[in-house]
Image 1 (cartoon, rainbow, N blue to C red):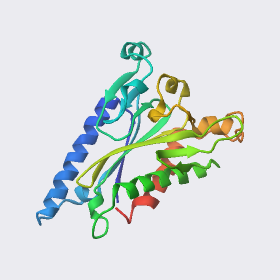
Image 2: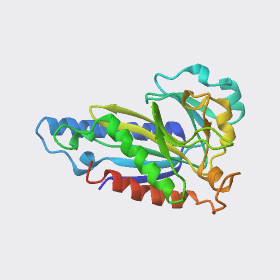
Image 3: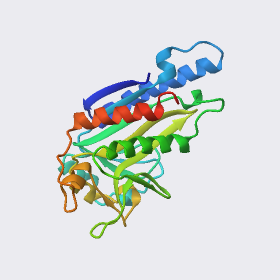
Image 4: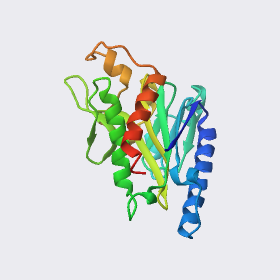
Length: 240
């Protein structure tokens, strides 16, 4: 069983260091298996870190700095930090009310040839889409845009509810997804989220109580975590 580590609210830099420690341990375990020695059960399975971060903006390794629309001095003035990191994707925001998940898994254990990164990301998206469906929100994929999106309506364009950006080395993954639950969406005004200028951003709360919302009550973070873990296990366990 993949171990779920609930970190609560944690500084981004601290979480990144913890990710790297799990990542390095799993890489080492994978190397041990390749050399014919037995790896530990923990190393073979991996972990799912769940958390929230204080306000932070992260830019992927091939992202464009001009998608940050304000200065780093301004970010400091609003209590936000900034990191240029080694995941895929462009710029995104993490903050309170956002469920961030870091699956650190060894995909080489899947089948005879391992799971490819494209299939892995597809399963990550699927676990989020299934989670959203529990509250009557219909998430979807769109071509050439990783993550989970909602369709345009009369008042709003296509809008992202969950960003995904990952890194993989020798089939071991790190980084992951960020699902907006009750996130303050104003913080996205300071960036072109994921590099897009023609699409919007939304959250579970905005969809349930917004202009076209269902009027249903908004789930708390702990409830969303429980539902997500169930769908994550359904998507991944028995595969990884």
